[in-house]
Length: 294
Image (cartoon, rainbow, N blue to C red):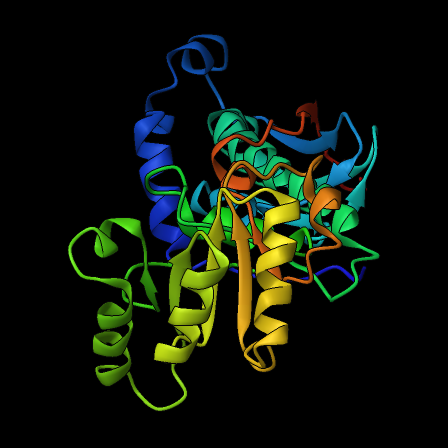
């Protein structure tokens, strides 16, 4: 899969907040040990196999600290132990102040991208092309970083926020009956805009489709029952041109169980809220300055 380059919205502001949070300008340890500028080179090195992400934030952190980015791997690249993903030069004190912020971004985002790649691999071979989507189950303040990481891993970002799409869920349906909720949403959306509704049974799926829903969310529906719902739509002539999404308790390990359903996408909250960080470390070496000729 080719690497992808992406700069999440608000990266610079995210970096500023992270550096303020870590009080990078008040590193007491480094100030105590280094009383003058020392030219140095820092390298961020992978310690495990996975998919790289978070490089836009890493580069922005280096720049915010006045460091020179010498080389940087692209988001979406596959890494293994020993892969150098970022090289920076500058004052060693500034590198040390930026170290944890850079590593936090790269480790977390790469963990998300790596989990996504595992899910994408699990979706291969489905009877109908099956995409892997993120959800809004993201860590506060890190949504754009995490959504970009899902894309770097081969998945889709799905809707970013509540303003981007119409998705009628069970708590809406606790207040308004399904058919009426779909009709109201359909009447208030722009031409070509998708209206999606959560359903739990074949009868609900057919009713929603006939009411005008062009996307159906099967949440917490086991594979066998999900397959029966999709086939029911097919027999009723309501499947063509209608999107079917599966969600609820689906992990990268379990994606393969849903390949026979005939759905269009699986959405996994765990990609963003539960991904294990991919380990990286930063090595620091002083630069030897060339002496000028006598």
